[in-house]
Structures are given as structure tokens and as C-alpha cells.
Image 1 (cartoon, one colour):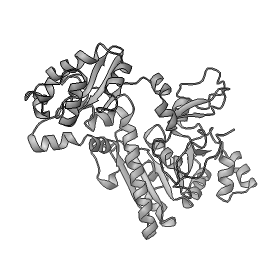
Image 2 (spheres, one colour):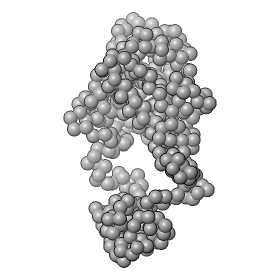
Image 3 (cartoon, one colour):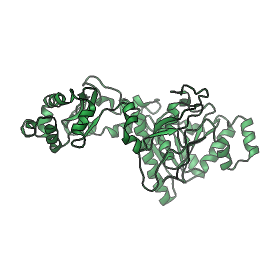
Image 4 (tube, helix red, strand yellow):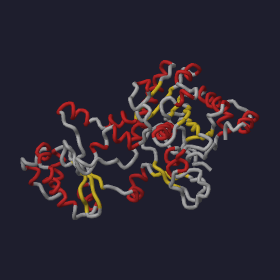
Amino acid sequence: MQTQAKPAGALAGLRVIDLTQMLAGPFCTQILADHGADVIKVEAMTGDGTRVTGPFCADDAMRDFGGYFQSVNRNKRSIAVDLKTEAGRDVLRALIDKADIVVENFRAGVMDRLGFAYETLRQTNPRLIYGTVRGFGDPRSGESPYAQWPAYDVVSQAMGGMMGITGPDRCTPTKIGPGVGDTIPALMLCIGILAAVNRVRETGQGQFVDVAMTDAVLAMCERIVYQNSYTGEVAAPEGNRHPLLCPFGLFRARDGHVSIACATDAFWEKLAVAIGRPDMATDPDFATNAARVQRQQQVIEAIEAFTSVRTKEEIAIALGGKVPFGPVYTSAEIFADRHYAVRDMIVEVEQPGSATPVKIAGVPIKLSETPGAVRTRAPMLGEHTEEILFGAGYVEDDIRRLRQEGAVR
């Protein structure tokens, strides 16, 4: 049983052939699916490699997929195709010829060698938008010396500059917790694809959309570029501080940490009063942001004299709504916070093989007239093979033959 159907989203009517795996590609196509696109996930006969990645529910004996796969493949349909066979390649070509968008994240050249180069596909489907996300981009947009290097989240975080400005001190670069080296490029690719959708509606011509994971991460770290260009400074990790703003970072609480961000002197004045230090709002040594940046440690000590002896909840009562503030949440605290409940950001879905539904993150983009939604759980491997093939014009005998030949599952 699938999750109860919801109204179609803003992208209803678009058909996407999803040839992606791991995180960056599937995250992009899931966003399209969340907003109504018909995303057909074309998998190998053994399935996307993340199907075997946990966590799994304790009572799930089926183990068709775990939490990783569930979290980035909802709202999609699955067909299993063996692209090593001619019949399997014919199936894929038939699906692409009727599609609006193809998304893949293989290494550069893989699809070309299989006979699915963009230049080939556009001959029979000139409206096709072909989206790619690779570690170092596609040679069509500029051939990187690293074009054939495999890449994952940590690689793009490292080479895109993000790790180089993150860490407890200037000598300790640190990996960002979530896979932003994948999800940021996914968002960029999604934007590129939707820009191309707008263009094809005007001209009838599709195009190739290329995102390098490293490029996307660098774009999100924009200040390291202008800092170096304007001043010659090579940015380094700042710990829980900010090089240009103060106070702006994390501060110790009795039961964890809180974030406080006073990007204006007006906010600083309110904070100084709230922590019992109104004198620091008028003292020339602390009244301006420039002065506070020069005396960061003294500012931090003054704030932590207030926060370190109070719980996150007590600090929230004192500062919430007055200055930019937020407690550093654990996942348990997120689950308990009413904000995420009323915003539909913790969504319950069926987990095949388990008697208990599971929770995944919801849709963050809220549209008033055509809202996105988690309409269906992630698909089981080849769950929709027949309906997809019927929709592509195949009949029962064709499907039986394809299965006998091992071209589809």
C-alpha cells in the first residue's frame, strides 16, 4: 500500500527519466517528484546500490531498501532494466523519446558509450533536457583535469572550499555533518533543469544542463573568493565565530549550545540588555560591530557568562523573539518541536517489510496553489516495471519476452 495520494504539484505533466544513484542525483530528481513530476527511476537489475544501505527497521525481513534509499527516492516509480542487453537499451530509448528530462550522474562518457549521448538523444527528442551532476562536471562545459576522478560528498566539500573554512581552529579543517557536497549540487541542478524547462516552453528546444559538485560547493562558499580577491586573505576555519560579524556563532549552554547572531548594532543593544550587560551597548569598545570583531573573545566571555549557567529552554525564554537566536537541536528535539509538525517537515510513510511506518523529512518548498507533497513512499525494485512499459506502448507479450530475455525485471 502506498501513501495516500495528494493533489498534483506544479510540475505535473513533466516526465523525468532518472538514471541516478547515491545522493546528489536522486536528491535532485526527488525534488522534481515532490512537486508533481512523473519520475521514472531506471535501475540496474540489482537495484540502486543504496538499497542495501541501512538503517533497516528491526522487523524488516524483506530489506528491499532502508532509510537512505527511502529518504531520497519517495514519489518515484521504479523499473529495473539491464542496459547491457540490446533489448534493455531499446526500452530505455523508448522511455527517453517520450520524456521531457533525463538526469544521470555517471562518470563522464559512460552514457555516451552506451549510445545515450545527449547529441544522439536530441535527434529524436529535440525538446529533451539532459541534466548531469558529476564531481568535476562534464567536458562539454569545460574539461576539468579531474574529469575522470570519482567523487563523493567529502571530495567536493574539500575541493570546493567548504572544509577549508570549517573547523574548531585554523589548523583543523572539518567535514560538514550532512552530505552538502551532494545536496547543494543537487539543488543547483534542479534550478538549472527548471530554467531549461522554462526555455523549452518558449523555444521548443531542450539543452544540456551540467553541474560540477565542486563548482556548486564553491559557489556556496562565495566569501572565500571575494575575500581573497579584495584583500589577498586566504580564509581559514574560524571555529564557532565569524570573521566579519560579532557576536555570530555558537555559545555554551548548561545542556548544550545555542546560536546567537547579531548582524546589526541594534540587535547587539537588545542582546546586551537581555544578558544583563547594558553597559556594553554604549561602551565605544563594544557598541559597533567593527569594535566587537576586534574584541571577539571578550564579547564571547560576556555572553557565555549568561548562557553557560542556563538551559537552552531558559535562554530561549530570555532571547527568543528579541534577537536572532536558536538552540542547537538534536534530532530528538526536532521531532518534539511543534514548528516541524505544523510545517509538515516530519512525514510518516510506509516501510515495505515492516509493520511500523517510518518518518522522513518533508518538503521544504511551500507553494500556495500547487503544494509539493510526499505522495508515495520510495518504490521497491522494479515495482512499476509493467505499468511503465504499458505506458510506453508495450503489450503483455512484449513484456513477457523482455523478462524472459532478462532485459527487465
